[in-house]
Image (cartoon, rainbow, N blue to C red; front, top):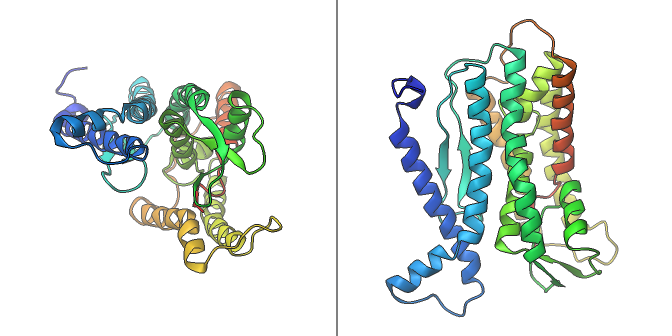
Amino acid sequence: MPISDPTLRRWPTHVALFLATTASVFIAGATYQLNDKVQVPSGLSGRLELLLSGWTFAVPLLAILVCHEFGHWFAARHHKVPASLPYFIPLPFVGALGTLGAVIAMPERIRSRNALLDIGAAGPLAGLAVTIPVLAIGLSLSKVEALPAHYMQEGQSLLYALLKRLFVGPIPPGHDVFLHPTAFAGWAGLMLTMINLLPWGQLDGGHIAFALFGNRQHRFARLVRYSLLVLFVFNLATLLHPLQSGAPAMSFADAVSNSTFWLIWFVITGVMGRFFGKDHPPFEEGELSPARAALAWFTLLCFVMLFMPAPMTVH
């Protein structure tokens, strides 16, 4: 593709953001290694060695993100839809991942129903093709141990539970898998794909659902968005009054802190709706082929298999 293509002219910006994100994700990976050390290594060489030790988390997570975004990019190229290279978003020293993922800019709306589906589905499916083997390898390197008094519980989904069963086996009561950094990268890939597949607005899941259902998706998308508030209230209530008999209740402040994930996404989708419109832009007339309709249903089923009611809880 000639460099005069306007979607490629800002390649220095894309490269700079990718390098910044790489450094940020390596810092996050080094943090996990640091948890197993008594003290921070001294000297430049020691700190550099610690930073590079974060590769077991950083490399697989970056591979997942790159495959996800270039899945979109290649599908857009196939359909001759102008699309930028990925803008990776670094997030150093904040959160557990070191990044907010990446986005691709498309200056024109997608007019073809087939293109809308293909571009929307290509990213999550390409990302999952890397995420699942990464998680399988990571789980095989992880250990099952008794839960301590204070711990961080990663979100559970049907697919994650199945993979744990396959690669770890039965887990005794009061125990759980303590994730190897590679396994945590794979779990993060599941969580990020779940968010992208949320069937709302301009998210990947919104593209797929709109390609499948057409204008009926507008009403469904509103229900999806307000269900995020329901999830926030549900998580808050179950942490204050656990469903499991004998389980300790959290303080109100801790319960709110552990429940805000879906509240934050309710706000994010509201901001996105304000700037990009609450309803999905229309596409040209035409029906999906049976094969593409099956692909759309399969991708939405992936969302169900990936859904985590409580993505992260600190006990």
